[in-house]
Length: 195
Image (cartoon, rainbow, N blue to C red):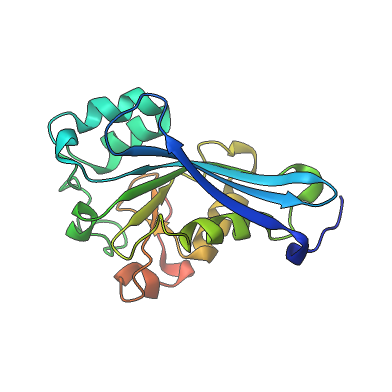
């Protein structure tokens, strides 16, 4: 393991139009750069702005982007970009119709090379995203922590929970609300449900 100090890192948050050019979709890249070691961590995701052009084809657009977005569309939303009624007040009962408002941000890859692991880089990558202009108070940030990290399932779930993510209903998805008064923010980690 190579030890590095977090204060030596530079974090950059960048967006680009999505590959499919779907209306309202932008690809997100957050990178952690070290002056000697180069890139020591990266986060990839998508921002989906609520756009009237998506209303009738939301699921189709999600399928055009990534498998994770297709799973998010099917697991959490209805075809009109509103939260599925089977999610509202289920599981830990902290998610509801507020999920119908604001932008959607989905984290689909969080990667830190093993030699730089367990030093807080992944936590900082997520924190940089959540404190960026991409995440307004009415935005919900979604993540499926085990989708890309099956080897370290519980460790990755714990990372997301410790930052404030809580399970969405009884799905595989976790959500984060930047609104400090959102019910998910007062739910202790130990009370979040496992499935």
